[in-house]
Length: 111
Length: 115
Image (cartoon, rainbow over all chains, first blue to last red; front, side, top):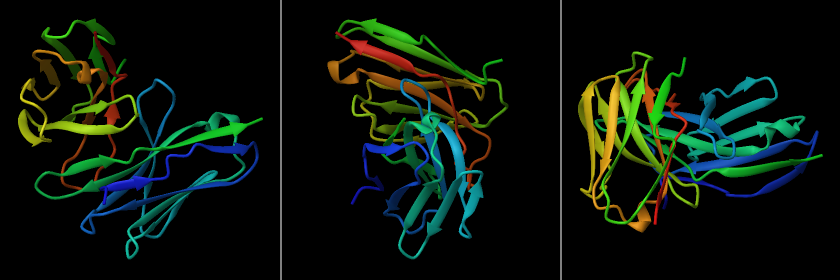
């Protein structure tokens, strides 16, 4: 099983729709979770952290289910500018403190 | 004021050559990383340094040698380049280690093409 798995997509979604991405991780000792966004031919940038209680930032909501080792990202009222690749990221704390990226889910918002 | 800067941004070279990519961060972070993003867009960790000490070496061929002269710099030297080395190499830095951080600040990437 891969360390961090995501549906690669692409997700083609009309503007204004709600879209959800999922991510699973294999290491139950993982401590910290994040969503990053990467635009075409650009570097990844932090979108938001994911907390156990769930957290929201404007149109974006992130949730964590430790029992199922599952992370989600919900985007409401999607905009054309939301088109990007969304990367699920897990920090496996420990001696190595590895920050592992999923392969990403591509999102295309259609006008 | 670029926080994490890499040079060069583009590098085209022949198989067998040796090349270096430089990275500098002005954020005062202790931890720096090299990631490789291949043609399938998979971003894979290669190395991690904390305050000039090598922390992570992800079974990268020994043709790849990172060097950290100080905690603000992490350079990557690649010997005997192969076609499969073609990728975008991202440098990143992080403010904390071992405290649950996953916030990485990336450079713009160095696109390496091996012919």
